[in-house]
Image 1 (cartoon, helix red, strand yellow):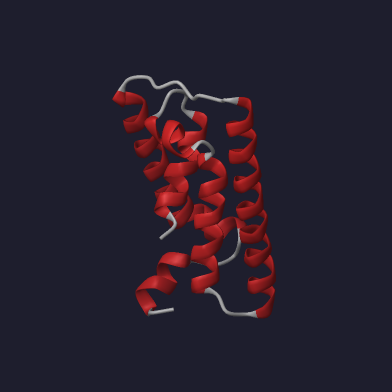
Image 2: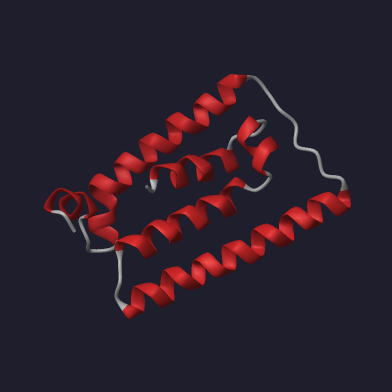
Length: 119
């Protein structure tokens, strides 16, 4: 469920995507998806406090940013569809690298082994 989060975060850094045009702030939405996915997967109090706080922050930040955009009349430009393809490919590659190797190195948890073992 974190794959969309990685794609949204990648879309925040690729200029001219349709994803940014449609959503406005894909990185904040990526944080929302990431936090929600981790809340579903983890039930310890520390997990709920950490990921729940990120989720609440992202909800408030997204609402505020969209209000600010509407007030300022912000319009995000759109480039060729290749920009969206780049965002999706970069997001998928980043997810694979993080899920398969970096998560266990940086966080100490192997999420893919947990998924295969059933949690």
